[in-house]
Structures are given as C-alpha cells and as structure tokens.
Image (cartoon, rainbow, N blue to C red; front, side, top):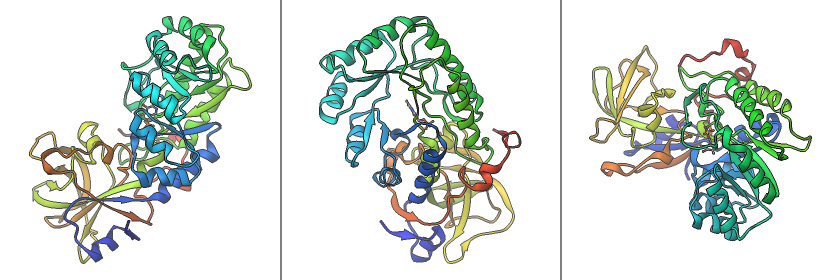
Length: 397
Ligand SMILES: *Cc1c(COP(=O)(O)O)cnc(C)c1O
C-alpha cells in the first residue's frame, strides 16, 4: 500500500478518480494502547466495525488478541492473526456456524439469549463442557445515538432458569449487554450495570465474567462525548458494586472507539448547486451514518496543486454519486465558501461502520486504499481531550 504524509501530499502525486480510503494504522494502535492502559479488564474488538485486513493487522500488532466475531468469515479473518482468539457474541447463530466455530476454529465463547439457543450451542458442540457461555441481557439504550435494543436479550423474568441451566454445563458463565452505539454519557454503562445486578440477583448462579459490550464513543462535530476515561471510571465503579466474586472478570468489546479514527476518505466534488455538493462517495459507500443517523464528519477541503484550501467556511449538504435520493447527507459539513467542481474533501473519522457498509449499488463501490502518517482529523485520544472535564464536554447532538 502506498504511504503519504497526508492527503495533500497524495494530491501532489495524482488526482484520483475514485474515492480513496486513507488508513491511519497508528490511530488504531493508539486506541488499543489507550484501552490496554486504561480499561480495567480485557478488551475485545468487535470486528463488524471494520474488518479490513490492514486495520485488523494494526490492532493485532498493537497487542490486541481477542475479537468479537459474528460470522464465519469474521472468525476466519481473526484466526489468520497469530495468537488471536475469536469470541462469538452474536446471540443468534446458525447451527453450521456453531459447529465450525467450535471444531474448526477453536471458539469457546458463545452468547445466547434463549433456551433454544443454549440447546443449539450444546447440541452442535457435542455437549462440550469447556464453553464460556454469555447470557445477553436487556438494558436501557437511552444514552446512545444508535440504539440497538429490541433485537436481542433475555427478559429479567426469564433469566433465572436460563442462568441455572447454563451454569450446570458451562465452564464459565457470563452476562453481556450492549448500551447502543456511540453512547454519549457514561451513565449508559452505569444504568446497564445496575440492570446487570438485578439479573445476577435472580439466580444463585456464580458469574465468572461481565462483558459491558461496545458503545464507547468516537468524536464527531456536534457529537462531542465526555472523555473515555469518564466511561471507564463509571464502568469500574459500577462493576465493583456487583455481587460477584473477586475472580469475576470484566470484558469490553468496543468497535467504533477502536477504529473510527483509523480511516478517512478522500472524495472529489463532481458538481455544486448552491449549498449542495455532489461528491463521488455517499450513503451507499462509506458515509452510511451521515445519511441514516445524521452524523456529521470532520472535513478538510483540498485543491489539487494548492493543498488545503482555507478561507471562510459555510455549511454544505452533500449528495453521493448514485441516482437514489436516499444518497443524501444533510450535514451541515463545514467547507470553504468557494469550494467547487474538481476540489477534493477529506472526510475524517469514517473508520467505524464506514467502508464495511459500502455496496456496489449503481456500479459504484470502487476505492483506492493508501496509508497516511498524519494525525486523525479529530481524536478521543489526545491529551487535551482526555483532560477535558466531563461536565464541560456535553453533547450537542
Ligand atoms: C456491534 C457490536 C459491538 C461494537 O459496538 P460499538 O458501538 O461499535 O462499540 C460490540 N458487541 C456486540 C455484540 C456488537 O454487536
């Protein structure tokens, strides 16, 4: 893969015709290091946020060894990394996935949220007694930009029986939840762990691990979460209050927070109509969340031959290249007032749920891939970001 110091340097060499994914492996590594130094437990990476081989390699090279994988393809990618271990936290799986995961890939951790799924796991692993079984529970998603509730999780009233049945066959028994993606307040995790306490109280079953899932936020314009240390502090405090033994392990499985900063995309303006720019990537490409969750990403305008364009900025809406009207990114994206056809825009922090969502719809979906050595456009991991007092860094979104 070609490497440049920044997007402007890339444009000094050529004027790409398709969107360019700009990978920053050092940003992924910095996130891993932060979690290793700051999270008081084991950190898994949720592969669905970004499964690009170079991103997985960067996380692995930074020392990450545990991965949350939901499909056989993800499990295979994880297994290709030396010493890496996949854990299947998807509560509903096909029988063939369970068999292959257990017998071919050495997976021992499986999530479930019903008696039928527990039976399925036990049957397809041949009655294995070396399993780590993770009961997915229901927790509030009120503090997250992208709630995930309503799909998975056992109701509190049905949990006792499942916990006792799983305890009887599991080597290790855990509880897991997901507060929703892009949690904007540490209180989301506090509430979820208080909910966890109620599940633990329903049955006299020893709990060996508690997995707080994903949801750790990234920084976007207008969506400035409190520092990650506030999330970790809230988790540590609530975890300490749980009625579990001293040996109970704490796990987390961030996706977004580990990789959001690890990629940007360099797009070209194909046309301008007033306050709207037509660009060569969009909702069916790496900018799904801009269309469907109204995310605004940091932007930087570049003109081939001139480098970064300065000047007074105004807010623009964007349209992607397909002929579908859902391919609309309302923004507003702050860009120089004189931007026009032929200019480029670097759109930052699209490393999570970006390129993984891209489809070949309408004949688009081709990208170049390069690596950049400059800093991500906005970071949760800067020293000054970490120093921000939590109460002054409230969400605008
Ligand atoms: C998607 C997912 C994650 C990662 O969520 P983020 O919001 O990206 O941190 C973690 N665990 C499970 C089970 C998931 O489905």
